[in-house]
Image (cartoon, rainbow, N blue to C red):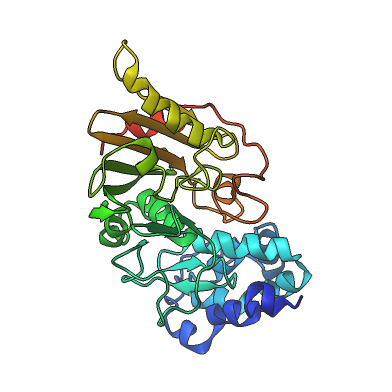
Length: 338
């Protein structure tokens, strides 16, 4: 596979930092810079110790370094492995406020203020995006739905850490989504999605509230509505038997209505991704609330993020186990009310 297919055209991406247009925006040299007064061989000896992403960012600080750095940056890139180049672009995407790393073409893209998590009221793909994103967290293939791309997680965590840049866009990325369908699969269904950044982690809460619609409210009617709370916790017509742990948990929650001890939430945790779920069944409504840890947003290879992506190798029937303290994601989300 060519470097262009793996990293877009990385030469073009890095070349943008050293174009003539970029040079016009470099600040003039400060005459009192002791670093620039060092002999050139000593300057290079210091620069060569820096990570590649730091070299590129250092080159953008003034015109003198802009002239000195291109060949050293391109030389380092030519000698780097595919993983090292991806790490470089990831670092740049995390540090540059106006750009993010696209996981589809592995290139840096400028942010689009109209690009925020998709739902049934907003299309997932937009024609004016540099490229479509293929990796996203999606709660269901049916409506109502909400979908979060990796760069939504990356930008929301980055702007929370920066605290001063693009805060309006950050608010839109973390905006609460709520919709109600009065007759969805013979029931009324309310969907609520609300992400939060807690301890530099992107925690997503999804709540589904089922109530009576055109047909009576029961386990049988609820189980006819297909819904995905994580790649390993499908619920619906094909996943409502005891063979599916989550479907069995929902069934037990409905049976708890007959328990003389009163209605108690049934707690469930996925063994293959950091996801906690609470199932509360009442006489007239059922509440299924899911809390998912989508990671820090610093790398698309983050095990937390990867564990939430559905694939033929990561689904209800397949997938590696994921170690975390069951219940910790729910507790972390509840520890930060706003």
